Length: 188
Ligand SMILES: [Zn+2]
Image 1 (cartoon, rainbow, N blue to C red):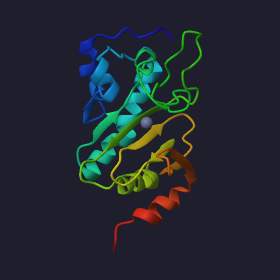
Image 2 (cartoon, helix red, strand yellow):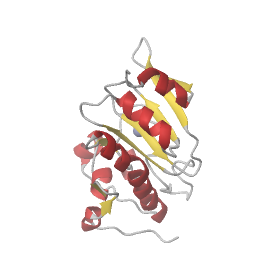
Image 3 (cartoon, helix red, strand yellow):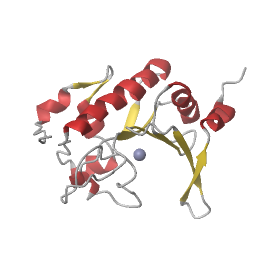
Image 4 (cartoon, rainbow, N blue to C red):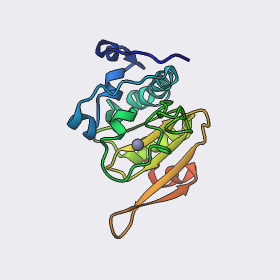
């Protein structure tokens, strides 16, 4: 498929019912620092950004209130500027973007975003997603931390708890989707 050549105005297109593409593209600490275009180039990336908004972000906003995106789409250009311990080959923030050698940055495909609903426990939001949405992966960092949620062709329904280790490093632990409900079900 030919690449999409975006302009800044294209980012004002709606993405789902509540957001625009810009909300998922011009967002996050690194983007705020470097303010590069960060445009998606692959049509499949744009399609999955829409699916992420329609399948996950819209239902969450309807249920809990406006969603605050903390990290969304990451182009190859943006990834180069991101400091620290990230793994673009697994984290799905690059959508279906291609490396220079023509291979996908993240072969899992789909699209991820990190977000929270201000004032709402992220465990409750994760429980809601796990119970009724065809998600791919949820990384849960804590009740007051943004969730990482992806949709993708594999739709694996994998929940990973990212526990804080003693040295501050995150230790991933795969949990059953039921684990969320057991931890965060609303009190009766
Ligand atoms: Zn993430």
